[in-house]
Length: 419
Image (cartoon, rainbow, N blue to C red; front, side, top):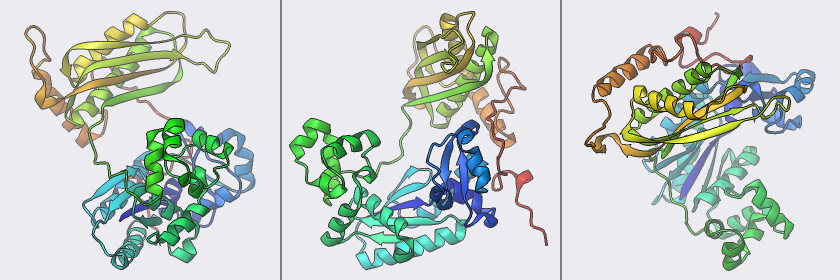
């Protein structure tokens, strides 16, 4: 049996933990640079505020209905997520963190009555200890557990936020209730194709022929059908090292000079290098791209990218910065207003399996230097120590006009209690 644990309206719930006066009031959280809505409380949803709503278009509605608006506080959300996941991991070792606010737990071998009681205890403990409300769906497969979670959340008062699908009658009833666009794994585009042929519910989907699904859609759709029928096709995914790492940013203003763009690209390369070292990998290739602002029709447009094959595998910030600068020189053109750039590192080798070449290799002195750099930045704060080619005063900063304090990770912003 699988349990899917989902934090309810996670970002909004994180804000409410430290602002209980917001309980029962509409709350929205905005994306990077305060662009659009990425999280809504139930009260905000009832006002008709859609997901991805542009903040500037809904500013009047926010003011009219006294909606509490927050900039995304990813430092806070990440820490609160870790607290939730640490509690969940106490209940089973067979665990998959699916996203920042969702996790699958495998309870193979548990009797149903015991599992129901266990999940009810888990739901109460997580909510009490972290302040984050969660819903839990339990079923024989991951996809059915997701459906059970929808029911637990939709009918929270009746289910006490924990619902189990463990009989054929419950499975069929749940699938006839669940709309096809609500099935885990069926996106917006696919759901429209299915609705066009009168497949309206998850139950309708399970009635489709396997051969038709594979031919018209994909083999994944066949596995999805099996999951909905109660036949396990998707196992838990264990955490693995990433196969590519990217650092990309939109500039706060247009850059026209090579040195301006170069400083940003070198910073992005150094960020990728740090992430490589964190997962103990080295890369053998990197891609650098630059582009102008395509939203400005009054500007001349240009975008280009280049893949640089490295002469040796490395995770040294110094070496990756040098390769990134060399690649940028080949694609940079004068006369354009650049708005975005990025670095993507690929083709990884475990750092303890890097082969030595006859003529050219990574500088062995960089290993100790990078260890020292990472240690200092970990203890004193990220980006305290940089490469000389980086601007020491330049820190990429999002537009976050409504940012809440980092209550749990910054001693200077810890919650203040007045008595």
